[in-house]
Amino acid sequence: MQQNMEGSIITSLQNAKVKHVVALQQKSSLRREEGLFVVEGQREIGHCIACGYEVVEVFVNQGDRSLDSAQNHGPVPLIHAPQLYVSPQVYEKMAYRGSTEGLIAVVRTKEHTLSALSRQLSSRQNPLIVVLESVEKPGNLGAILRTAEAAGVDAVIVCDPLTDLYNPNLIRASIGGVFSVPTATCTSEECIRFLKAHGIRILTAQLQDSYEYYDYDMRQATAIVMGTESTGLTPQWREAADAHIRIPMLGRLDSLNVSVSAAILMYEAVRQRRIERLKN
Image 1 (cartoon, rainbow, N blue to C red):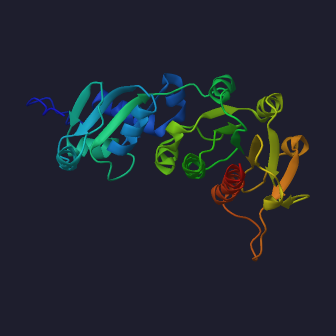
Image 2: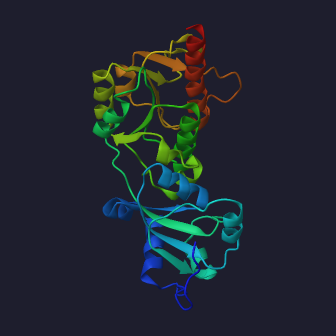
Image 3: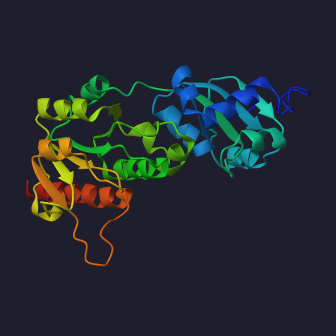
């Protein structure tokens, strides 16, 4: 990364580009309107680029020595976009979180429709899909995407979303999983039609009228459907389900965090499928 020319450092907190980055961090409506979002950190930006996202511009903290260290110990992400240097004070204003290794990128969003997802799944045999209905907390959705990436889940579908996929807390919690896991957003009705049209069995996670999760076969094309922590799934999902499953609750509390529950169910599917592969 080349040194900046003397006098080219942005030092004003009132700079229009600085204000634009701050607004993108804070306003989901602006992210949707402009089709742009913000990614912080060398690792996250590198993963974003590797997953085919277009970087529009990059802001470099002129006072961050970790960039020099990174270049001495490995490649800084190759970014073909304008690079603007900012003072440490301006960078602190722009950054949503601490310790972002001196890089902030403005990135163009991707399409997250069911039709796009259908193309991505066309070559997958017996896909494993996680469906989330109206999950509120970006951190929970990000954690689920992180686990989905680790478990090799084929897709995540977010129904009737209450947070957008490019919320900075979601990006941080996903550790880049939001970039690499095929993802779609839609209504619950659209998702149910999509799953049934593709012959994907629907398993709803619920405490009522359900079987323990390890008693159900998840080796075939399967969608694991999770609801909100406060109210669970809506009746339309319970009626559309091929089976209702539950995680046994042996203590005094009757629920788990939705990201923990999703992780348990994803890895049960992984376990069953690995055993099946070993048999063959």
